Image (cartoon, rainbow, N blue to C red; front, side, top):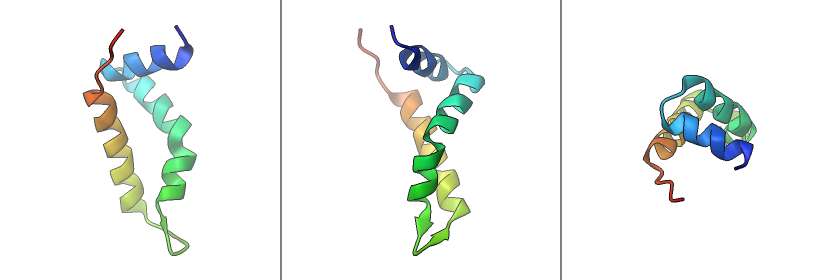
Length: 63
């Protein structure tokens, strides 16, 4: 099993540290998508973080 799968599974099970690590991994992309017309939108960044965490919680793992 790879490290990301272990981290993702831990985040899905409610591990706050694992969720934080995933948010840190995706922070550059979340930041990039939060810039509108050259201006960083902090509210959009926060919403994207929430959406990512919700996606992790709802993701179905099939092994």
